[in-house]
Length: 249
Image 1 (cartoon, rainbow, N blue to C red):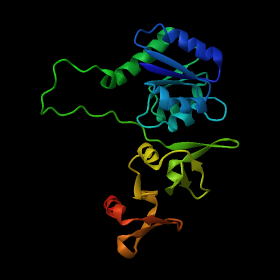
Image 2: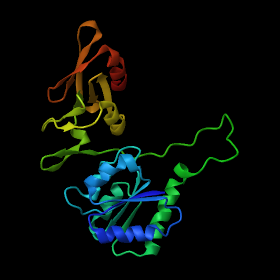
Image 3: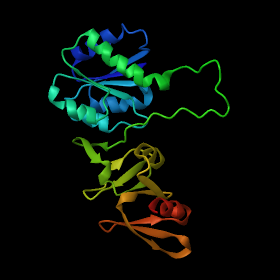
Image 4: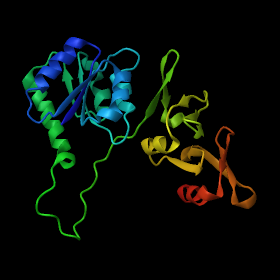
């Protein structure tokens, strides 16, 4: 099991590392000093589990949990504040460790994680399944509810439901919302994979959130425009028009 510890206090990280090192199935441990650091480390480290503090500078642990890419690691919140428990479980947390905790309490949380991870981590059996056997169902991953966009004052939180459409801009994408058009360093294909089926590509340089579409206008040569609630008009090329219409039916 690969574990990323996320806490802005060094003693708290040291305690977790010391206890985790006594668990034989923990194969890799890495630390992040805050939520921004954690999100930057995720793509390279690819943890199975986040041990995540809630109250941290700039962005909270709850913001981190809502911004995890898919497939997302499992989350156990580790905090000194019990008033966030309901919000933590709403964020699909596996457990909620209240500081100060001991090794026995951490082990109970880790066992819950192991039970959930077993379908992902179990080694292939020597006896191969029958050719007509149904594949095991994939684990459902929590949806990404918000994106964190760096700006000159720190981080800006963009709720996914507010994104009307997305277009490419060199090595960035532009997120069109009613409150502005922030830039995010990401490919359009990579972002659409993270956001899931609520968005549909409608042009080689654009994608739209389906719930924002109010109408479709046909143009010459099979191209069209998508008219969004609020008045925005988004190009829809003939290459993608049939897919868009099928998703709207």
